[in-house]
Amino acid sequence: MTRGARHLLFAFGGTLVAVLFVWGVLGMPQFGSTDHPYRDRSVHAAAQHETPNVVAAVNFDQRGFDTLGEESIFFASVIGAAALLRPTKEEREQQKSGGGGVGDVMASTRFAGYVLLPLTLLVGFDVVAHGHVTPGGGFQGGVVLATGFHVIYVAGRYDALEKVRPVTLFENGEVLGALAFAGLGFAGIAISGSFLSNVIPFGSFGSFLSAGTVEVLNFAVGVEVACGVIVLLAHFFEQAIKLRDGSRAES
Amino acid sequence: MNELVLIVVLTLVAAAGTAVVMTNAPERQAVTFAYFGITLTLLFLALQAPDVALSQLAVGTAFIPLMVMLAIRKIRRGRS
Figure (tube, chains in turn brown, purple):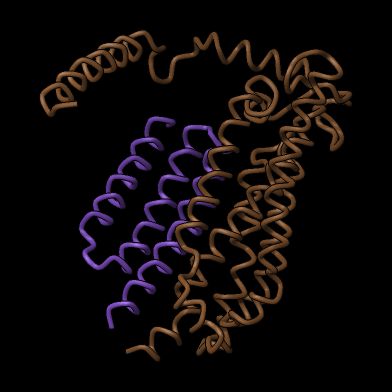
């Protein structure tokens, strides 16, 4: 395609998007107004499935298929980043001499790290487990869990972080979480005939065991996101810290 | 009252966003970016979107700055 044709195609597509966007924005309810037809419908649908957190109901029940797409994007981007960051052949040979010991960290920082580690993990579990009743859910809790692990690194112990973080285990965990999400979707087809339909008993409004598949899907996403973020950061750490000694020896 | 809260928080977001743009060194920018993330979290909270606020807090103030710092560290090491 020539440059001129490309510009023409962009001008056409760009104008179309701009017109549709302005048209859409003009049709939106006023900021701060009380008239929200979509909200009324989704709140009603969430209440029918005993899900107090309407956002979770929209994400995992009413629009579960969209969320499966988002999870797939996350899954694919972790794999893509891991493939880009994998050590080259030379780096892998240098890596044998590498390894981080105890960093030069203030005692107070190290103490804060050890206090914050269990607290952060607990908050992460709580956010995942109660995603269907209170704000939060699998994604938020998963990120908290994954970054919580790295408090060990802030406390100056990269070697300890490596011990509690066997990367292959978390790689498998990420796959397991993604498979569980899709599997629950197919279970919906098998039981009620439609993908990702809420086939688990709803329970009573506001209790821990309620909201049917919303809670289970939250757990699946929590496992996938926590493992995925840990794997992603592990590759960044490997590049930034483990390969340090190698590049030093080179220069 | 609601509007007052929104005006204050939006001003904070604008100030923090400007601070990120005005910061030159990338490793300092990771820190100002984390502060910008906190102000965005407050904005989402003020707009009654606690789910989004939690996502923003976890991703914008912890995950992204850590990734940026690690990437900078790798680049610096490659240069020296």
